[in-house]
Image (cartoon, rainbow, N blue to C red; front, side, top):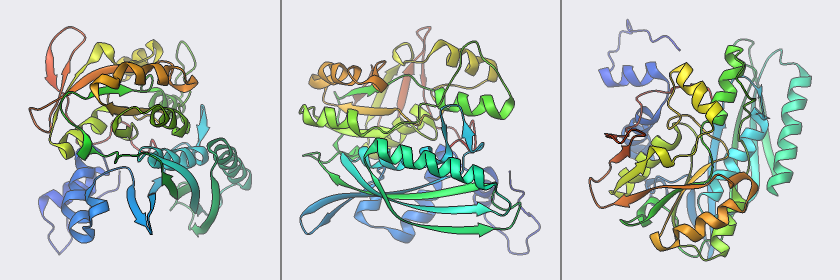
Length: 348
């Protein structure tokens, strides 16, 4: 955690100090967006608060997104920072209902980085791009002093063509919609932590990092009435649903029993004091679809290898607006809120 110099002669408001000191998380990210970024850059695409911007270019509907990756370690079970960067940006486009086409990549390299490590990361990006059927067409490289970059940081941006016939965004979500997750949760976060802490579990746990356009495309081609999509990255399922509920001004009710989590992941989370509902995933998404299409959507998703454990976990309600409630495994009910900080920092 970066130390904040509280003796600075120019006083800062207390909430600014808190934001600088914590370094990320669902509530804090939203505070940054609400208080700093939206007032500075307010425009219709940004105010949609989606995974990417939907743009109209001479009648062509395009999606545009960008993301940065600072995961530690650079190589982990099931992936690297390189394929994570490709898949994450491809998936942000897919969540807009867009076929991913082109990527850019900016590399921040730390002085002294072994060339073999860089080759491993770049090769993983090449493989991931081929799997996702996208081209990396432009990029940039910068080198920073030793001790200033932690190996490699990567920024990627992506462009895709929107193929969804109707807008996919939180604004389309309404009461009666079904909430579906595309697969079991928590594997990415546990895989990262196993390397950081040198832990071994009963069964191997690998990151779920993968491109998601194919299952999304299957939903669209089948005519499923998809209202909103969101990949379950930083902050996990809880943060994603809270963001959508707040933007759409709807309520959501989900069942903890219905949320798919592998037993080895659940056990690891219990030992480590983590909640799988908040753990990041890199190959899972939430789909909010019209209630009458829920079963057909589930059938389509389960026919895809990476979505075999897809499940319907809840429903959208009129009230309470902006709130997600959870029916626990023992039958109680509680509010499923955003965390103030990250359970696991530097996870993507």
